Image (cartoon, rainbow, N blue to C red; front, side):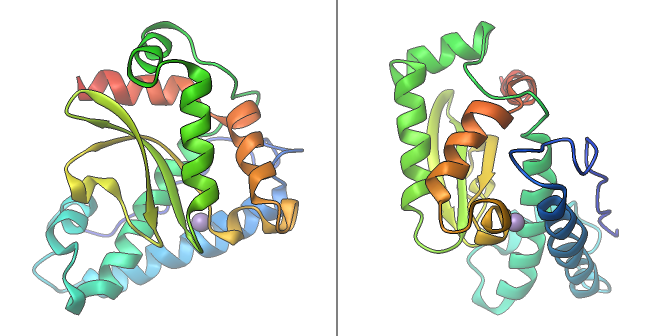
Length: 200
Ligand code: MN3
């Protein structure tokens, strides 16, 4: 079944001044669209075509002969998830059950921020930083290139794209500034809380 490129959950300029309409235009309209179309072209007519994209990602993870299909499938999924992880006037400290869970599992929100900044900042080259639920415990992790933690049996709650195409037009080489802005101004904690509730 063909995977659809989702429309952005906000206007292309809605995350300004933190992420420009130009960045979102290229990132969603060119990069993400390309992963989706390449995934659909590669999966069509194969025995994997009847599976959901999540099941395809899990089925072929680590299979070197299917790395091209994996990369496009995971990048298609990761970006669909990433758009939902941001919203206008987002970021800052979450509240409610999620805030309590972060305090319980990391020690404090500041400790979570430290771990998430470290994951995003130390991912050499391209990849993703994640907040995941692993056997009932919140953890921060990072993946290289197209990697997705569902292949490790954990549930993604939040992701941040740290490929240069996510921030270069707005931040150039200043990845740490993009990461700080993502946490302080952009995170959609309602989406993260929904993901946590659904996984419980
Ligand atoms: Mn990207």
